[in-house]
Image (tube, rainbow, N blue to C red):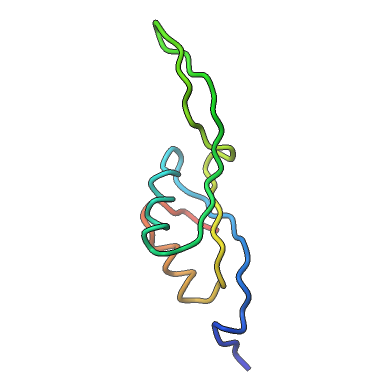
Length: 86
């Protein structure tokens, strides 16, 4: 007997994104009304003549999506530009 979407409980899934495109993918998934997590940390960046704090991904190449994963949601996520796989 197949499950209906209301019977599947939401869980967190790791989404692999193209390298250095994590923030764009995060914005696109948020625009699709998905609950996302993109953990970042501050780090000092050293430029030629100055130092500056920048935000870098805590897990480069990955972000997290909380959803009840059915076929529709899986295709919706995988069709997002920049998403490589789960």
